[in-house]
Image (cartoon, rainbow, N blue to C red; front, top):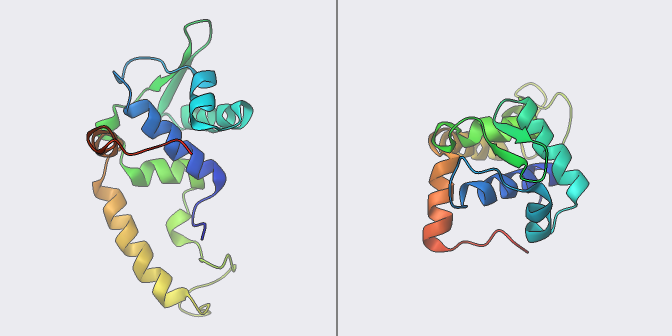
Length: 145
């Protein structure tokens, strides 16, 4: 079951890869990241450009270039990251993708998904990228396929 897009999945993995590295100020090479995470370089570049345009990352071109956090990871909550990757209406979308789904015209999944979305949003509002990076390092969670 896919709740977020491939771009959202790859963006989350890339940001977690970055925050799980040695320092948050260090630029991470996009080519190296794409190879380690097994993500198309061009697709990953587009995703990271989007996060740069949204003001979460900064980029630097050149031999030692790459991407780094513009906003400190302990100030980026998952709600902000998900909205940057999936759109501001992520928590308002119908699970079945039906337009106009709501209390007036619910889909079969509406009530169930509404509860799940609310819980998910609450957790995302209290969890930062730094929190996930720390648990990734401590528990040696995997980011690669």
